[in-house]
Amino acid sequence: MLCQLSINNFAIVRFLELDFKAGMTSITGETGAGKSIAIDALGLCLGNRADANTVRPGANKAEVSARFSLEDVPYAKRWLEDNDLDVDEECILRRTISADGRSRAYINGNPVPLTQLKALGQLFVGIHGQHAHHAMLKSEHQLTLLDSYANHSILIDNVSKSYQRCKLIENELKQLQLNQQERIARKQLLQYQVEELDEFALKAGEFEQIEQEHKRLANGSDLIENCQLTLQLLSEDNEHNIESSLNRVIGFADQLQSFDPALQSVANMLNEALIQVQESTSEVQDYLSKIELDPEHFAFLEQRISKAMQLARKHHVQTEHLAEHHQALAIELKELNNDATRLDEIQQQVDDSKQAYIKSAQKLSQSRLRYAKELNKLVTRSIHELNMPKGKFSIEVNFNPDIQSVTGSDQIEFQVTTNPGQPLQPIAKVASGGELSRIGLGIQVITAKKVATPTLIFDEVDVGISGPTAAVVGRMLRSLGESTQVICVTHLPQVAGNGHQHMLVNKFSKSGGTETQMKPLDKEQRISELARLLAGDVITENTLANARELLQ
Image (cartoon, rainbow, N blue to C red; front, side):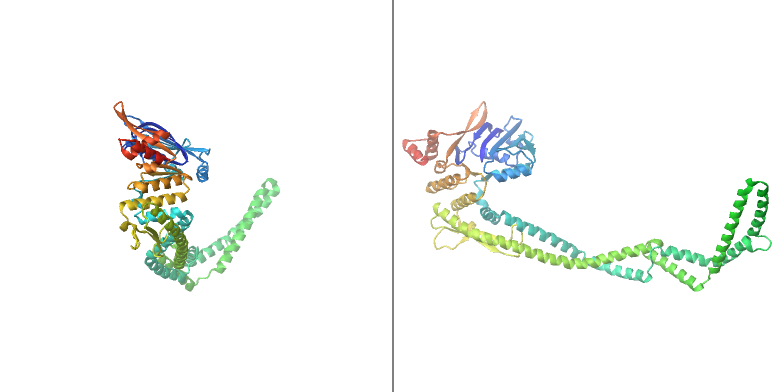
């Protein structure tokens, strides 16, 4: 719960330090005294937007801090632990706003982004403003109220996840469908190209091979002639050949080494040269015997090279890269064929995800129907107590599978009848301003009992209510304060008198400036303040007696 609120140089507050207790705290004061300033300041600690106008004129900055007890607030403790922030018995939220509008946020002295301050603040405080009942006319707010009462966070989270998955798959399907005509045209072209290349069936590295073979056959006559000349010079010429010349030299070398052994290495080298010449002669003879001048094979190679070059030009690639290009086109065609299969798979996934969404949405809708019936009885009983004895409240929940959103497929409508014999109609068409205020207040109090927020603030939510109805409102808020800390800004004595404690807001002038103060009242001071709310400036003994009765 909220234990203390400290305010420095905020609006017309110079300095204010307020200690809050459990139960219901009433806050009253003259019109314009600044009763809602403390609520606005607390809102900054909860992550509300701030601007330079909130800084007291003449001050460099405004500073607001709120101290909360973590007792019986396990979810806030878990949040602090999950975000690696200090966890103790208490938690301090602090906000500073400089005169130029810049603000900083702190949790337990640690600088944090405003989003974190807001996320944690929502776990500590719930604020109900004086115009909250107008928001109740909107169907989305009606849905929020029902879900808050039913604590549907888990069910809504499941529906939201199903919805997001469904949309993700639908977008993928839509993208595939948008590109389908382009893919069909591309597929037809690829099929023709791949079939043509399949028919030619050029293997990787084959072009280089056939190009080399073509070159060999094209120069076949020269190869034969040069091989024959080589053989003549090596060994076949009767008069002069290398082999016979080497034999003669080797004979001379053998004689020389007999005279001087130092020349043995020369004889060895000449013998090795003779062996190399003989081996070369053998290889050339073998090569010459295998040369075949096949005109048909040469024509085949020439035709294949010509076709390869033609296809390479057609596909704008180098001839030696044609086989790799063929393989790349075949892979792309396969992927396009897989896309067709993927389209069928995605369509099935869309159908499955829609069914999963509808299943989650139906589960949420059934829970809404159950809690709507429960809330109907409670709100009807509440508006009876709030001086609408013949009134009846009902929540219409209609499931429509054609409507899909992160919050489900339900259409929600609050309906009411205030006079006997009249049918239920949408609340916006039937309820007057005062009736709407009472119905809205009843719903806020009822739903607040179900929401696990330790501190609830009601900022002049009793506008448009008076007399006996105001007394009922006061008792409702006091009853709520038995289990939850309630802070109520009010102008009604019947409501203020039900508070477990009471604070008074005063505005005064000092040193040419305006200041606001807030102080707790003792019993006698409370009686005087209630008497002022009852009668205004002229307070009589009867007024004081009425105030004492209200306080009792």
